[in-house]
Image 1 (cartoon, rainbow, N blue to C red):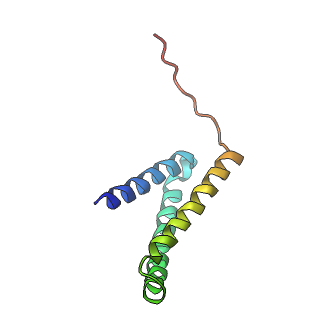
Image 2: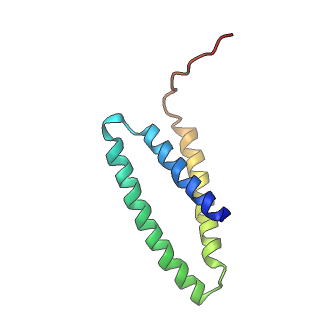
Image 3: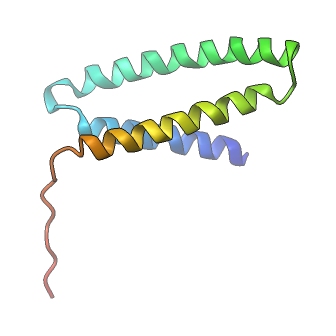
Length: 95
């Protein structure tokens, strides 16, 4: 159950971040392409994970996902550092 909650949180937060970064005119298209490639990725990982489960070790799909998520995290941090994006206007609360 916790794995499902974590996965859903990751999916929703990534959609929110993509929606914030996409230009207003193309938000729908960007989210559509994001969803399409997410589905392709799920299909690919399911096939590859099943093959590795059968041929190598039952825990190998989990190790592959951990490695892929680690690479993605490092890549995301590097992109964020290289191209930080525009600063959003933030309202200052004065007391």
